[in-house]
Image (cartoon, rainbow, N blue to C red):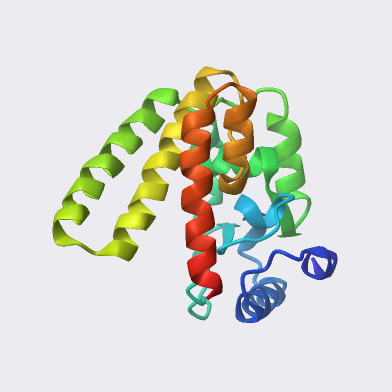
Length: 210
């Protein structure tokens, strides 16, 4: 775990890094936590991450922990549900098995799970990505009426992300992290949406950096 913390230069903030370290240290004394896995852009070869995405698998009861900072997103999954969710093609769990990085596990739980699904991991659904893109588009239109520029931009990114995933899945390309999607889109000839998403992500990064 310390190797992951020290070698990763994409932490969105020192506060996020410190919270993750403390969370993992807490997990060592929590027998119900089977694994903690980092996923999303923080585990990919990208120059920056807007936030840190974590999931943890617990055995019987969700352990208590301090509220994470705004740039850390934590998801919890019951061990009893994980296998069935993966078999159904659960986007986040399947992505994490394929690309995620275990920063804590007990008794090789996550390692064995990855090995089990290595060759049979379900592909994401393009239809579900389309549905999410359409929901995002409708919400985007509603926000434009309200005039909240920050919310509009975030919803635009969400819509473009779902559209990108749909295009990639139909091209038999497994979508990587959000900052990698423009490059993946260009590789399948979808340069227009690639440019729109890249421009939107750059604008958000520039705003955060100011």
